[in-house]
Length: 201
Image (cartoon, rainbow, N blue to C red):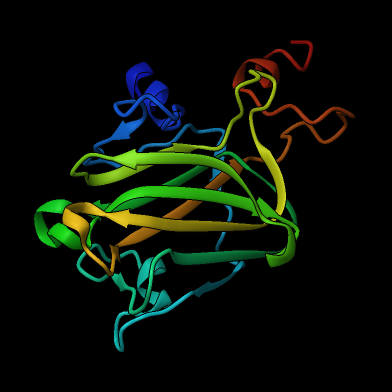
């Protein structure tokens, strides 16, 4: 479970005119709510560029010692395409400024859409020398917008620390709500509170 402070920081985008807003530092532990599940195991992953031996597979190998390294002009892109429309709540990246220094992302944009032709930016965050798991909430400003519904997610590294050109990202996880555990229930509840009170005991 994330603390209230972590949840608030993860949900705060970097706003124009507010240089300190939304600067994330990372957490040593990968912690997500029990009512979320990893969604991208069957998705198609691709990247805009990579150095030989440091390709897209390193983002999903559950090994913090390996990493994707871009090899081209910014922005550096990670594309996640799903076979059907999915509900997504949270993006979690593992980055390590102590090891990667100028290769560490400093500003990241999250985009969503049906495909490359209509991607729209939904969140921008700034990172402050992060070491560990960086949690980026996909929820909107409206508290009723707890997730996004999309065929495709794109993670764009817009800039790196110390004006670095190429980037290192060690892991990426994508989370969405678990399916409704009450099969006969016509409504799809996504919060733990609604699920708790969705049946008569």
